Structure formats: structure tokens, C-alpha cells
Image 1 (cartoon, rainbow, N blue to C red):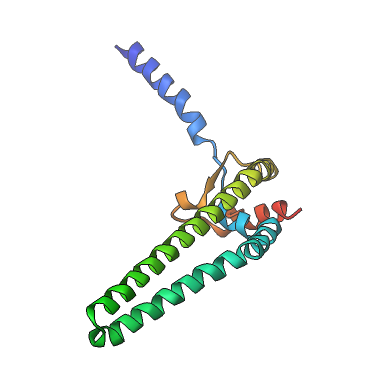
Image 2: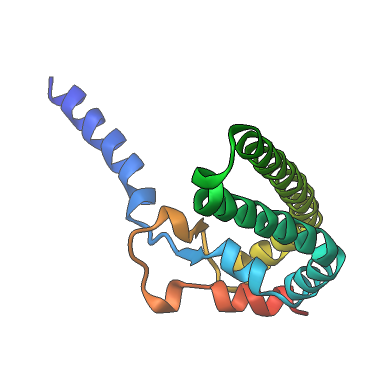
Length: 165
């Protein structure tokens, strides 16, 4: 029996030594670093330029729908039924147009953002790997997965520097 206890203790000690070694962990806010990078700022500016006309059309449709709604609420009681129905139909059509334009714009912008993220992914991965090696870390966690981190272990600013090279 003592032989079994001795072997069990040896196995437990063998597995506990790696756990006793200090594990060095860093934390990065990938979203903050990526979207604060020079590339992201350039991308954002080009996105605004590319879609300025579409955004103006969406705002215009929204404003026209708002005016129709106000007119319907203000003057609807004084209109005969056919005028009120006609105005309500125009309002519904304008709301549909607004929704369609807004959804199309949002979808196109999201596709462009996703393409940017996919294009940036290899660069971000390489920068994170460099941080891991330069800081002699065992692990880098995203900030979303961490409740608290000491400021010196938050490597977001270093990641941003690497992305801006």
C-alpha cells in the first residue's frame, strides 16, 4: 500500500511542476488596435467618400417620409378619405424606399468592412505573434475574455504600433 501512495505522490508532483512555472500572459484589445490603425482610418475615409451619395439618398428618403407623416397627422383629419388614403399610400411607399435603401447601404458597407477585416487578419496575426515572442509570453488573450489586467500586461498600444509600421 505504501508503494501505491508513493507512486501516486510522485505522479502528482510530476504534473504539478509545470503548473508551478510562471505562465506569462498578455492581453490585447484587437478591435481597438485594428480600428485605431492608420490603415483603418484610411479605409474609413474611403468608405465615407464612396458611400456619401448613398447616405444622402437614405437621409433624403427618410426626410420625405417624415414630412409625409407630419402632413398626414396634421391635415389627415381635414382630408376626405381618398386624399388621406392616397397620402398614406405615398407615406408607406416612401418608408419602403427608405428601408430598402438603408438595408442595401448597410449590407454593402458591412461587406466592405468584412473584406477589410479579412485582408488585415494576416497582418494582425503576425503582429500578435511578434508581441508574443518579444515579450516572452506563453499566451495572449483578447481583452473581451479578461475581467482585469495589470496595465503593463495590456499590449494593445504595442500592437497598434506594429500595425502602423
